Image (cartoon, rainbow, N blue to C red; front, side):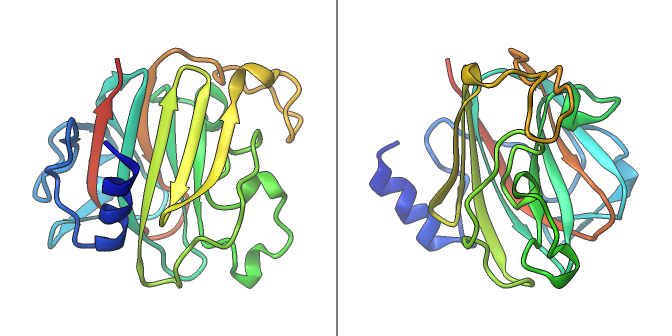
Length: 208
């Protein structure tokens, strides 16, 4: 898809169609089809998937290289995460990667480390700040994962552009062993932490 087309989709957000070339929907707006885990912890209302605090769900299918697009809405202090190339048990920030979903401008998070900001690969790669819309508004996000390349785009701005081959999984910013950092594939998860974060228009394009 040409850049101009992607920019057009971002400008149209949140009224975005699922007719993008090569993309398939991961959420039909009515059921939990295609998902596993704590599905009762994610309420569906008016085409929106709402996290009941603390619950995690995962795709039933594993993905290797892909472009993952979705929209999300944060409440004040909202906190969630997107697991990529992750396992369905354990801590996804370590057995795969966790992309932060966070109202990082809230006062309660004033002492965050840079690798905890919204869009960061938690503990590993810090994200640029300033691309989130005010709490209560819908945001558009894209996560590209292709080989060692991970790129996160929020509301049309690239906030992470990382080469994982240059990162030692045992020498990360948070000092933890991110043993799943170089996984070739894994599940995509919505990782609830304690807030009713909302999701919609969840779709993916596998890259060959």
